[in-house]
Image 1 (cartoon, helix red, strand yellow):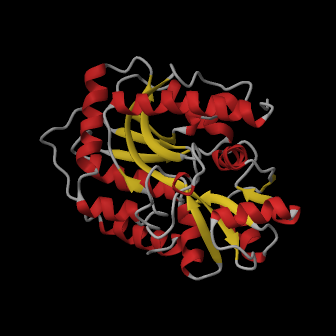
Image 2 (cartoon, helix red, strand yellow; image 1 turned 90 degrees about the vertical axis):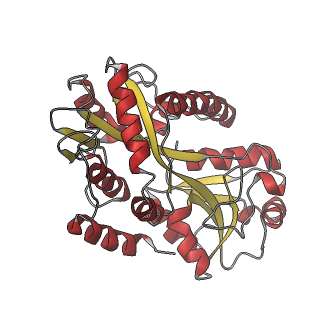
Image 3 (cartoon, one colour; image 1 turned 45 degrees about the horizontal axis):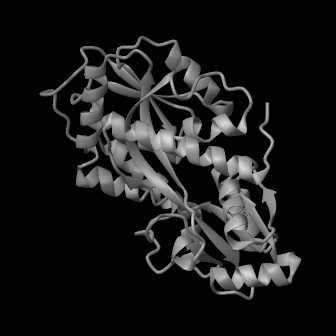
Length: 327
């Protein structure tokens, strides 16, 4: 399976080759469109946006470009969306945590997540996993939980940051397993994974894509994944629920939004164009290599349903964790 660095190289080559064909037969807009991405250029979200933009050129708008505007809580990019014309020419690619999780983690957001942002389509999703350091004397999740209960030095996990879905997946596991775990927040995937590799923490929770390559190399041991079914990328690893820890599930979906008041027919057309693009085998293969993302389009109604379900789910999880919302 391709790792992140190999993916960045191969995706850049794919973009440079401009190998994706386009068609203007079903073009919706008579003006250029842009995809706003709230992450720096070169990352997986940026490259996913660029791959999608190539497929939407001609099929949705005469031209589609990607604009990167990184900023805390996606605030900078959301403001750019909300100040744009509500005509479907400005698309926003973002994780659905901005609507499902952030409202419960931060006291004030510069947008109303359920009314300012209009869902168009899911683009791709990824699951989480829990991995233990190579020197931890456990091979399965139940063994690790038993170890954590018997020796506090093992009752520790690192994640990509305080208030993230990875942090709260650990809280869910605490409640399901009846064990107290100390959470160590890091600033992003790289330091979290390094903490696991070095044995600084006995376990970590993060995206499958950042951890699976180390599992394959025997440097970390993935002991559970967060889906309802086993991950297609780690089929040998059972889920949390499969091992008896009910309700310990989680998934991040990246999707396209437009601003409120965008006409319904335009939203539906954009959704259809995205669904069609994601049916292309070459595009699907490229996205699947993107840190183990699973490509999948959806109707606006399906995406809205995911968001509202996640909103309710994370509301209960955050409250049960005792987490105090930040400013």
